[in-house]
Image (cartoon, rainbow, N blue to C red; front, side, top):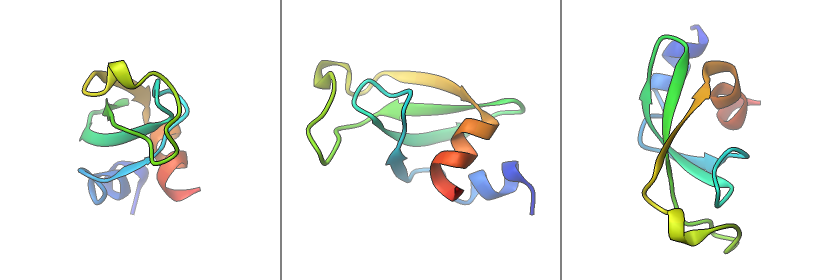
Length: 69
């Protein structure tokens, strides 16, 4: 299984994600070179909670590391 297939198996799940303003993001979509995440509330109440619901892109490798490394 490659990184894209593995990431497609966790669409809709949230994880710690360093690029999120709250340090927690939910995977929405896997593209060819990037993944689309949504900013979600962190269980640790960290970061800028005013930005919950915003979407942002990260490279495939960063998204894969967040879930599987």
